[in-house]
Length: 337
Image (tube, rainbow, N blue to C red):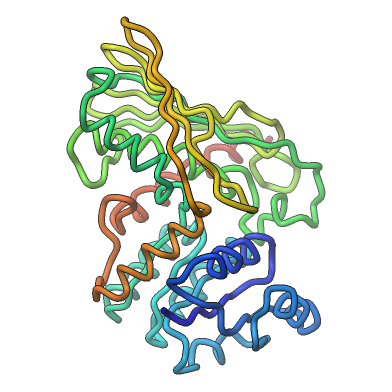
């Protein structure tokens, strides 16, 4: 069992801490946050023995094996680098960074220090996603040619909210655009037999909200002239999250691709439509996606792994994915006159 340091006191930090409590691969030992009172309250509510306001003190604590970073997006890179350089393994919530220089700096720090770094796209660890990969490798619906993927929710505009604050890395692309894009990259990688499938063409844009953040993003990605993906993200509209994968011999539909329940295990469902009829596969789960993610991170750390590999999620994917998100976000806000 590994000892975790939790950086951040928001909802996702609480969800991850609960996942640790429900499993047996790790335990939260210390939490660090900016506000002393809120951090103490978080520690008490989540049964964490110690609370700090200085993340550097957490990084220097020899009892800590790994650090989970769940702060606003703009701080992810700096905290990840500091933790890696202090000798800690790092699981950082997406996005790992919000500019290309920081993307390279984080991954360079991981390579230089030899410490494990992983970007947290929790759905990749759910049994549903593993089953989807298996079906794609079996050519269940023939040659894949089109992917439809979206994630969106309607948030009330508030310039003080992190979602609409550019200084905190706000906007739909940074907050949730990585989900449909990373899913499309996963499907393309499995279909093409590659570890990291970077699209040959990526056309993107969007609709801005006030304050130089993006409200809605739309993109089309194309791989090798064989596979196209239609991608949408929004913090201004509640979108149908269904994933559809079209092939030459049928279609795979995943009604709930992100399996992001924060309260308990969530079974998966995959629908396969072919000429002979429709087949529904139910995939049982005994913990949340965050729990599966934490357990696999602990296994990687125990094995001496220095970087994540495909699949569920490779270090090379983080680099390519976040560079594309940089382009997408820039194009989405560039429409503001």
